[in-house]
Length: 271
Image 1 (spheres, rainbow, N blue to C red):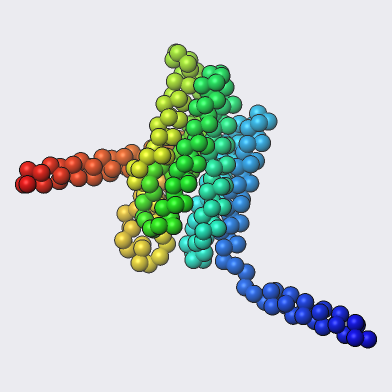
Image 2: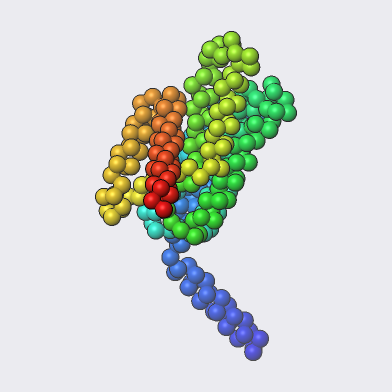
């Protein structure tokens, strides 16, 4: 009798705890994390498609991964659900979708013809992207900024995808070069990889909040322009929009560097 009463009490306690857990609201972080995992899933599918010889499908899956990556950031800001967990999960997903997958695409597209050097070049987007994301995670914990330090890894990936989708059926353009299309791919990969690990500041996607929107109208209009270019011109739009994005960052960095240099010279003259 006593034993059965204890069992009933234990069951009642368990049921009470279960009810309390079920009554708890769903954590906000779940919503953006779903989009982050969809980003990772698209990256995984892209690698599978490329391995099976479906390079075009793999390229578009990387584009879909970038869409989910943008949505997870948007949802995190909208739901005020930024967290250390979300940052780490996003970085792990980005290494796969925008580091490994684009490098794998380039290797199967043309770099495999260069043997060992081609393998090293194909690994650069993942290697430099991992360094850039690790630095971003550390900086995000220290101070919040409206600029990216170094080229964002999704931009690097979309530049590669845009190049592949634009020229995959027009390789005769490069037939007069010594190494064919690789004469363009090699410097492109090197420049994009170096920009990722650089300290050149690039614009972040502006926050959709009243206070922020007033101060970031110009950036908002620029990003809307990027979207229009990509939607209208598609493959070419990816190259054009992100080339403008990169050049804007480089030119702004060069101007500020020159101004700081001149200011230092003026101070030295005064002293």
